[in-house]
Each structure stands twice: as C-alpha cells, then as structure tokens.
Image (cartoon, rainbow, N blue to C red; front, top):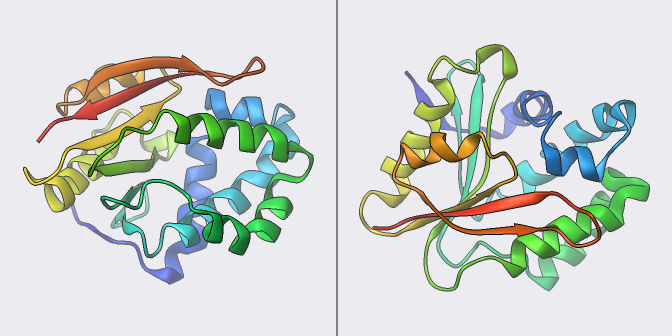
Amino acid sequence: MNIHLARKDQRRTIAAMLARAFFDDPAISWIFPDRLERSKRLPKLFMLLFDSDAHKGMRLVTERGEASTFWRAPGQSQTGLLETLVHLLPMLNCFGTAIGRGMAVGDAIEAHMPAGEFWYLHIAGCDPIHQGKGIGGAVVRAGLERAVDGRFPAYLETPLEKNIGFYQSMGFAVTDEWTVPRGGPRFWSMWRPV
C-alpha cells in the first residue's frame, strides 16, 4: 500500500475523511452533541489540525485518501501559548459555542501527556467505508516505522475502548484511564516503548 507524506493540496480531502471517521467518536460527540452542528464543524476542525500539525512532525495519508495519521515529533506534543494565540480566531470559528467543551478535552489530554521524548500519535482516522480492511493499521504502522523505529517511544490516547486491542497489536499498552471533567468522555492513555 502506498502511504506518503500528506501534501498541502490534500488538506480538504483529508479533513473531510477525518470528519467522517470521527463523527461518532465519544469525545467529538461530547464536544458537539448536535449531529447537524457536528457535521458542519468537523471539517473545519480537521483543517485546523492539519494546519497546526504541519511543522510539528509528519502527516501521512494513503494513496487514495482512505486513512491518515498526524504525528507530533518528540518535544512537539503540547500546544504552546504562542500556537494557541495564533490559532485563537480559527479555533473560535471552528468550535463556536462548544469552545468550552473543546478546551476541556484539550486541557485533559495535555494534563495526561507523559514527560520525556516520544512521538505522539495525535490523529489517526480511517474513512468508515474502508474500516476493517487493514488500511488504518497500515497507515499507523507506516508512522511507527518512519518516525519511531526503535529510536523513540510512542504515545496516544483514545476515547474508544474498542481501539485498545487494535493499538495493543502494534505494541502499545494501556498506561492510564481517565475522564474529562464535568461529565466528559473517558480516555485510555497508551504507550509503546522503544
């Protein structure tokens, strides 16, 4: 399977695919409980994440855009104050009245981020019509081979319990289970050692 670095001209295609992949995600559903509002805002969210991760690591995509991953390099996992300020207006436009819930999820994720040097699997998604075919696993493994490959550990968090076995098959192990405050979703932190 041909997996390559995502190009800037693939931004909208990748964002639309990720919007479909994450539509029923527990964290996304908590942030945007209204399905119509969610369908309008998710492509904007993933275009924003595509842009913000551009210089933080690598963005991989399959040849036909069925799946994609955004990896943040060691030392790039957290969002700094300057980055937050630069993206403040686009974030407000993206989240609208859901900005409080979006920030609650982001703050909880950052609070559970491990210390040290590691590659952070920030986003991993596969178009629902292509799930179960091994495409999502191939794009995650490609990132592990390109970025991690015995040099650094890797970290991720997932709000989907069904994803735990998927990531365990690639060497990740659950290190923590936690819940976003104020009735937010449950997450599992997962670590893949060197």
